[in-house]
Image 1 (cartoon, rainbow, N blue to C red):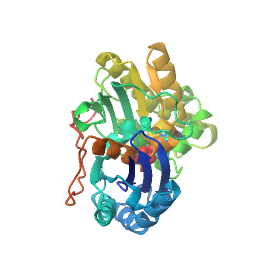
Image 2: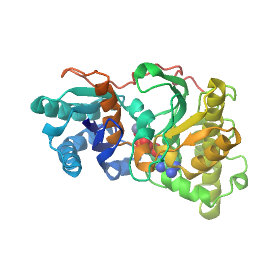
Image 3: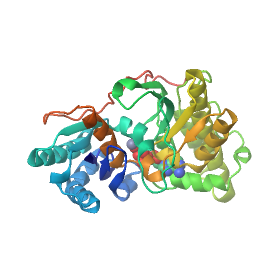
Image 4: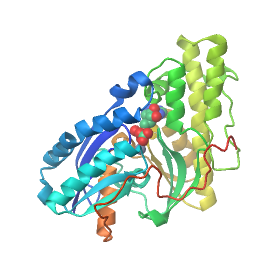
Length: 352
Ligand code: KG4
Ligand code: ZN
């Protein structure tokens, strides 16, 4: 089975052709980062307009690199939720047009399910070993941060164990980078600076326990506020002081992500841990998660970077599994801003 996947939920226009076995035949990602950078975050209207410009060329490129035409496809998968409504709409309309014209089945995919299954994609550099079900997954990106128990690939087999009550982890990186004048997106810059920094040298600039220790929920807005106050009092740090502050901030975020993911795996009696989302690129997170999992005899699976950040391949793969299960959607499929996965965490509830 060869399935085209289209992703336009946020600031990447992406398309890919993937088999139901997870082999990535092509994977094209066109980032809008430069367009949004002047604003320090994604501007929904700008995102939708640029998806409209890019979606057809990106889909064409994905088909051509895979050496197929629309007629060779077994279906068209598209991110239908969650995301920016206007951005989702562009991908949905492109997918519907193609599916209708070529007479192929259409399947909508929940973007979060795509992230949670991306570990199965087979591309160069992918880990030879894939996890068996069940596994506990930490999904940390610019838009989402949550821990899931994954018993299988379908919506009903995925359960949220805890999520952030306010900002996503990547959002915290981006906001802190903006405060420090480091540009957008902030994750990669802060990661690089943190490597040369000493968290202890930053003193108590960044608070440690960011959320109630015994819960599986996160809260990242307090750290961001602490950095904002620090900057307001003393101005933007430079040189070593900047590196130290980045190390302290990153350490606080990474500690919470690692502690809670490991606690979730142990509480669920699950021996496998999977990382997903753009923040999984963070070197501090990778190193500390690897060490924590090794200590607890947990097997850790970290997909290659291209599978962690937003991409069409994960959507194509999740869609291929839906198609293989005999599922499909009608051409009136509409975008939804929220995930279809049940939530256990109340957003905006303050620190817990
Ligand atoms: O998954 P992704 O590409 O898009 C979303 O769905 O949000 O994640 C992007 C997020 C951004 O917030 C970016 O700052 C963060 O991932 N990120 C990182 C790193 N690389 C990207 N955060 C921390 N460390 C990194 N090395
Ligand atoms: Zn994403």
